[in-house]
Length: 109
Length: 155
Image (cartoon, rainbow over all chains, first blue to last red; front, side):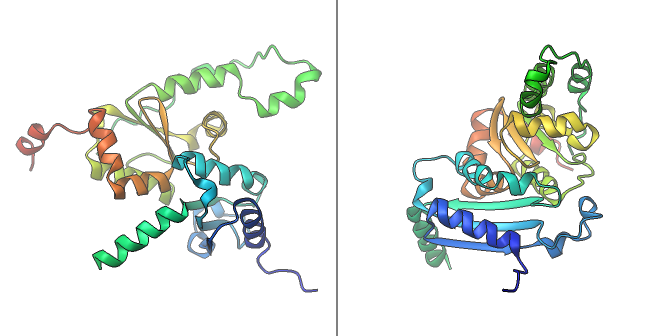
């Protein structure tokens, strides 16, 4: 079995899927945009900067900081590891909120 | 725009003394994961040093990270009064950099505090900027540049 080219992304996807049972999960690897970023000198990892959009009712009745903390806690080891995740952009919405945002977008365009 | 980059004078001094009462081997494991009282107190002070406090990489004039830059830009767009704002450069103080993450239970920088309350990082700041809740919060806390001085001093 060939090993994955994107082990970190796979881990993120697996953990979030298991924990939050998202109705939508988008993971973008933006690492190439930051390869010249000073903090990345000496790093060879191609998986340092991620943008993750999660829609899940696990976030219901929780404020945004609490939602982000849930994700941070889940990925604690990956964030702390040397050469692990350096930056993690998050959008955390409930199913309701995602639908409202969608409706707003289509009505305004 | 934000010239008052009060660097961690408070944090720096208080952090130095390293006499930890828990220096027995029994607590060695705990020490690693718990913030020392000194560091916690220094960060308490930093958080309380202005109504709006940003822990960032670099300075407001020269941010060293895109997310820190974006946060400064948002605060500028909102019209935050520079006199009510302080930024701490975590790159100049490793204990602050590590300490603030644990203090806020938040693994990334930048971090924004308003009236000593943790608000969030860049993503939260950005979404609050877009949905109007940041403007509302800053207005309620009377943190914005007053409207009159704005018009009289426009150049």
